[in-house]
Image (cartoon, rainbow, N blue to C red; front, side, top):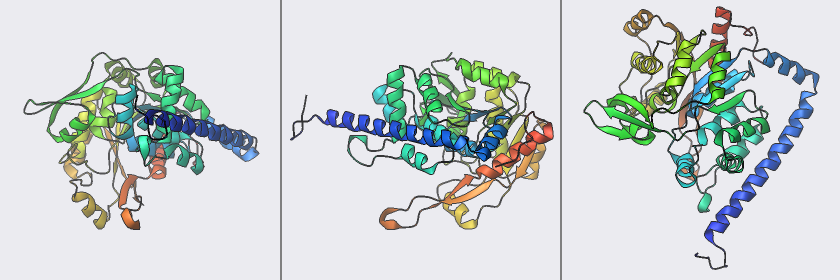
Length: 391
């Protein structure tokens, strides 16, 4: 074993930092939950908690930034939320932990847990803290915490449940499966591509997509959540690497398809370079319908104009806004899918660049606008528990 100049193994330094980080995080979580339990004894907070407990049961399916954005909005209406998260991520910190430790990728799960946590910015900053040097460079503290709890529990799904309870989140987050699965696709020219990263690079050329090994089973709790749902939301999120991977588990797709509740697909605001470049809304809906085995009951599409400077910035990377034209509306109507067009976009500013330069303006779904649309739809359909108002 190699040791550094001071007589310490680099691996030992990594482990020490890891353990220290996890200890600090657990301590802060305990402090946070003490504060939360005191706050719930407040009459106003108690009334809010009771109102949220009466909200509809929602199953939200996806992964990545899109799903966590949606969760931040709908948690203001109900705490009866189950986020079903894809586990095929291979990039960044999640990909490294998957390769080095053999665990399921924790990044999307972490993002969703943080999104459903009570409104405490300090806690979000702690779990999203990302190391910028040493052996831990690129890893977020939340990912390492999930890794540590997974090692302690010996099961990723149990670790996620423990995190759900530790953070006292509004709802729960579940991986769609705990089996190690890989995305595989075939392009129109017969080329086979493996893994999320390669598949996203060839998305616009794909003819077919599946999971390997085949026959992976969804969690029992995921299936139970669908049975109890009042509405099922698909997306927003990367089409081939966030939304569809969940539906490639046959048992889960069948359960969602047969559920006698509304299924709503939330379209992305923009195409994604390579992955969905050149695709329109109808083509997105076609892929989702094929994976599900049925056309969703409703689709939500943004109608808010994108500022020219932001659209131009995205166009340089190959991304364009996803709007509907008359022909697409007619096709969607012919599919028997209700189309809701409404303003759902939010322009934000990213992190400052090198030298303090202004961060790039980023386009995201507005959590509040999107949630308001969903719950107006619930009230229109008479979905139980949907007579709530946003806090």
